[in-house]
Amino acid sequence: MSSRAPLVVANWKMNKTAREAAAFAEEFLALRPSLPDSVGVAIAPAFPALERLGRLLTHTQILLAAQDVHTETKGANTGEVSAPMLKDLGVAMALVGHSERRRDRKEDEAAFTRKIERLVENAISPLYCVGETLEERDGGKTDDVLARQMTALDPFGSLPAGLVIAYEPVWAIGTGRAASPAMAVEAHRQIRSLLAKRYGEGVAATVRILYGGSVTPANAATLFGEEEIDGGLVGGASLVPADFAALVKAAG
Ligand code: PEP
Image (cartoon, rainbow, N blue to C red; front, top):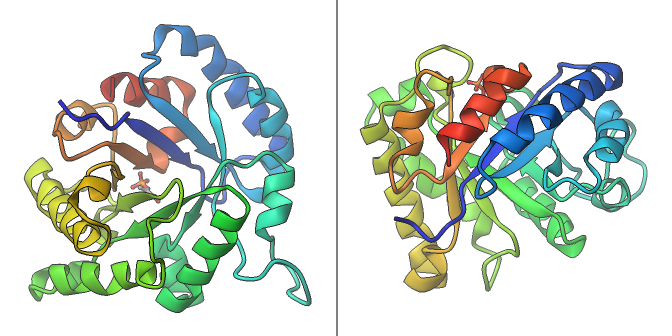
């Protein structure tokens, strides 16, 4: 049994208005007493819903999360949102390096390092996402890709405070084709050994590594049952309160 507390994070992507987020919260909070306390829960709505959802989550153990953050603290960056702005809204965790942003915004490891720095400065936990494409997996490059993506952590002399990693194979995201538990475990072990090389085994053993990619109530228990899988980062199945609750239960 791992000493790391499991964590399940909802990534709503560009779904749900503030009003829809509030309706979700009402339904999910009604289910919460039937769910295991030992499982941490975080919800990452789109930026416009952060304030309303945050108000509803006050005094619950559910963390408010953001889907991204800018590399700078303030300035001439139209349309962007900074770490102090997120902090002001009560955000406790933020995604960095989601594959949709790697793909659409061409963001790279140097940018991810800066984002993680901004988050740590503002006491927000970074949830750093890594994972290979199908082409990279088929080409036998998964290990190299994960090693390259993990170089975003190289500039940190010690483990960034609150760091959580999500292993999300790109070919599994939103495709209905989740990685097998064995595949996920292999990748998680590699990620943990990269962390151990940088920060030592004792420190690496404390870092939660979540799996993401087509997690559903049907496959969650098998995936989360693996000691190396400390919970999930979930897109599609996090949009419906009962489904998301089933995932939290499966992680307990
Ligand atoms: C995600 O986008 O982080 C994700 C895991 O999506 P889905 O659960 O829909 O595959």
